[in-house]
Image (cartoon, rainbow, N blue to C red; front, side, top):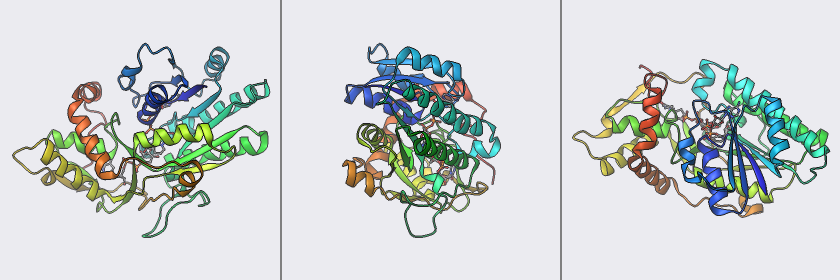
Length: 346
Ligand code: NAD
Ligand code: TDX
C-alpha cells in the first residue's frame, strides 16, 4: 500500500517511516511542515529509496494537502503530525489548537471527500496519546473505555482531535482506526523531552531539572515498539476501534533520571557522579501525577507485544546518543539558547 504519513520527520513519525521502508513492502509519502521538532537527518537512511518520498506541507493548508492526495493517491494515512510538547502548550497553546485540532479536521475532511470520490478501501489511522485520559491515582490503568479528562492544553487539543476522528467515523462512515500510546523514548528524540534532555545535559555536566518531587509516574515505551504497533493497527485493526499501546513500564521520574545517571557513570564516566547534578525545580503547572496503560486489547486481538523492557531500551538509547553525536550536536548548534536544554530555576 502507499501510506501517507503525516509528521514523518518527527521522533515517532521518522521511526515509523524507517520501519515501513525497512520491514514492510509499503510505500511511504511523508508529509511534514518541518517545525522546530522535525529533523530530516533522522531520515537519512531512506535517502534515494524509490519507495519513500518527502513533501513539505502544513496539514492546515487545504490546497496543499488536496494536491498531495491528487498527486500521490494514497491507500491510507497514518496521522502523527502534531505539536507534542506539554511545556510548550502551557507557554503558548495557539499552535496546538491550530495544528492538532484544525489540522486534523482538515485531513479528515479531505480524506472523507477522497473516499466518496471512489477510494473506498482508504483507511485513516489517527495517532493519539494516553494523556487524553487525564491523571491516575496510585492504582489502576487506562483502558480504551476510560472517559476522557485532558488536563493540559496539549492533551485537550489531542482529545479534541480524537473526538473529531471518532465523529467522522460515526457520522460519515470514514474508515478510522485510532491508537493511544504512552510516553515514548529512544533514538532521534528531540532533546526537550525528559529522557534525551537529561541524557545530553548529563553528558555536558549541566544540572538535571526534575519537576516537583520527581514522584510523577510515566509508562515508557521504546519508540520502535510503537512503530510496529502503528503498522499493525493500520494493517489489521478493525474500523471504528481504538487500541491502547503501552509497555507496562511504569517508572517515577526521579527513578528515570537516576537510571540515566547510572548508565552515564558506566558508559561515559566522569570525575563526578552524574546523580550529583540532579536538581528539584519548580513543578509544571497542572502536572499529571500518573499514567499507566492497559494494552491487553492490542496484545489479545492483534498479537502485538513490546520487544524492549525499560532496562534494555534505555541502555540502547543512551548508547545510541553516545554513538550519534553528529545528530544531536547539529540540533544544539541550531537551537542554542532556546528552550532546548533550558533548566527551570528552583
Ligand atoms: P514530534 O514533535 O517529534 O514530531 C511532530 C512532527 O509533526 C514534526 O516533524 C513536525 O514538523 C510535524 N508537524 C507539526 N505541525 C505540523 C503541521 N501543521 N503540518 C505538518 N506537519 C507538522 O512528535 P512525536 O513525539 O513524534 O509525536 C508524534 C505523534 O504521536 C503526535 O501526534 C503525538 O501526539 C503522538 N504521541 C506522542 C508520544 C510521545 O511520547 N512522544 C506518545 C503518544 C502519542
Ligand atoms: O525537564 C524536565 N523535567 C521533568 O521532571 C522535563 C522536560 C520533564 N519532566 C517530567 C514531566 C513529566 O512528568 O518528566 C515527565 C516526562 O515529561 P515529558 O518528556 O515532557 O513528557 P510528557 O509530558 O509525559 O508527555 C509525553 O508523553 C505523552 C510527550 O511529550 C507527549 O507528546 C505524549 O503524548
